[in-house]
Length: 538
Image 1 (cartoon, rainbow, N blue to C red):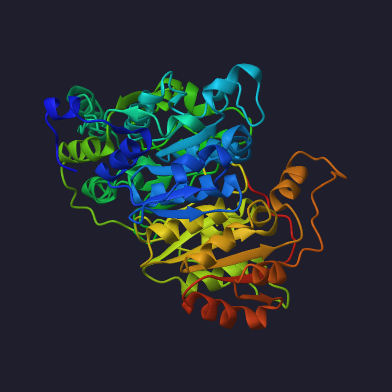
Image 2 (cartoon, rainbow, N blue to C red; image 1 turned 30 degrees about the vertical axis):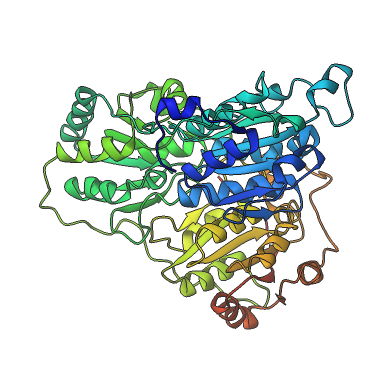
């Protein structure tokens, strides 16, 4: 769309709907995710052929797919939901999108303005408050003619660091109203760090005898990975993955990669106390899942923190926090450091073959998956109880090669994987998901089939919620109801939606089945019945 002069803009009138679609085109939107309802029909009328509408069969799946797509492309995804009920269905994954820092504009229908005073059927009372506080911006425009500008503002705010979802409620009768087009504008999305503070961070590393880097998902999000590798290699600094890192943080076969920090205060203290300087890059300081005492807070350890997130900077319990885009701060820090002459030594042992028994153990499953993992594969993982085992046996080597959810809320992984596949059709997407997690959003398989997404779904069936079993043992509680889940038939469920499916029960048949499913193109599901042993997470 060409830039228009102010005088041309003043003399031009169009409809709210056309102004909105013209704006979408101006920012490169070619895909829209939705589950439509009656209050959105005027927006959906004669849907334009140049924008793909991706239908999901439930609103949580809609938002999960949009999240995966947004994280893979680095562009805000656009979402169509149906009034308060549809938004309500989606809120678990809206929370996940907020924690994932996924840029997204959610547009929900609202009843017509003339009915709103009488609490109409399908009307959303105080619609902008409904998704708060887990959206960055929320509005129901005061006038119909303000709708396109509000959507444009929602897009620009979603794309400001840290990324996240925004929300616009649009009454059904607004779409045909007359308005002015949205002016084309360019708004920067990155901010530079304070150079004097970057110098202080460099001084911490230069003055340390044993420095370490703790790295989180912002590095991959901002395409700062190569600069981070250069930073680590310059001074031969080991790199640890921050607790609950939801993306790849460092090539996991690199000699400087030292492993994954657990989300427990004592365990993090144990891992970091042997160092005298810690650089936390693109992660909070620190994300925990269980309570405990952090000895680091009372120690003399030096710590600096590079992030784009003002909330994690403000909440860090110690250290120097430097706000700014990592695409600027990481290279600036590396440029202040001398190159070392010391060769990097391997800090993480290669995986060894686990003991093989007739039943498939999670360790054997991930060992086989690790052997078959190939360049170009991308993993979406939602199997919390086996994540530490996965990290032992599968080495993610490529930037953009791993995703999971930051929120802890189940039901994101499968639709998120579909969104990844829609964004990256040239890659094989592998969704590793627990049986309990799969049942939150199984209908996402239908969308994968409709769009022939190159997706292999690996369902680890241990007959229940493995993470709950683990925490029950950790907390020393017994006879907890609702943990075991039996009688599910994943093969028939998948096939009912047109997705080929297979089941394996023994170690002898596992590797061949895995290889076949990873080599296939298009959507497919492999159910792996695994030993329901209880794994200790922390």
